[in-house]
Amino acid sequence: MRLNFTKMQGVGNDFVVIDGVSRDIKITPQLAKRLADRHFGVGCDQVLLVEKPQLNGADFRYRIWNADGGEVEQCGNGARCFVRFVHDKGLTRKNEIRVETLSGVIVPRLETDGQVSVDMGAPIFEPERVPFDTRGLQPMLGGKRWRLDLAGREAVVAVLSMGNPHAVQTVADVDSAPVTTEGPSIERHPRFPRRVNAGYVQIVTRTHIRLRVWERGAGETLACGTGACAAVVVGIREGLLDDSVRVDTRGGRLTIRWAGGDNDPTCTVWMTGPAVSVFEGEIEIES
Image (cartoon, rainbow, N blue to C red; front, top):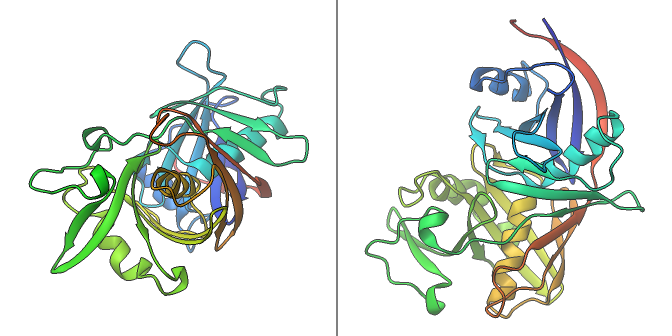
């Protein structure tokens, strides 16, 4: 059978987006891996499927598979592409929609300038909910940082969830950070039972950071929306950043806003950035 798709990208984080509303589509791990393969498939960081909602009050269901075929809870750059896709395809006329994900409901919104903003929900800091195994570890900075042993080396990370797990480090220079050498070890560290995204953040000013992320199941990507949210939340929580921050990734710029902190940690995080359709296509798959 022929499967229609749209190739999209948000600051270089690229996706194969599929309409599962107009036609019933079943995505298996094997199919997701094939679609994501840059040599034998279409090529992408994640495969996104638009479905009819299962929850009352939601407009759509949003499902995400990483390039390794694993289904995951959340993808921020994908959420922006999601709302652009359903709007461009005529699946909704709403500029703001409620979208059901494995980690809860998010609210993406098309802005008048063409950018897309997403209410990403509140960050989660409780280790057991990330999940992160803290047994035998001593917290640092009042529980805001943790030491990870990496085969004799040590990494000091902030651990939180933005609907998916993140371990964030502060570095002096993001260009020389050990993203590709250390990132895989953090991703699969046994203290993260569902694996983790490893972020490396360089603070430039109180309103500007640079970021690289080794993504769980995808490797280093040009941008990671939830990783940008996690990095800014960590900086604000530690008193290093203001409540609106420009995040420069290798693929482009995002703006993250969080009015939380220790006084209001349950405040939701807002992310704003581009969402671009690259091309339409179809691929032959086994029915």
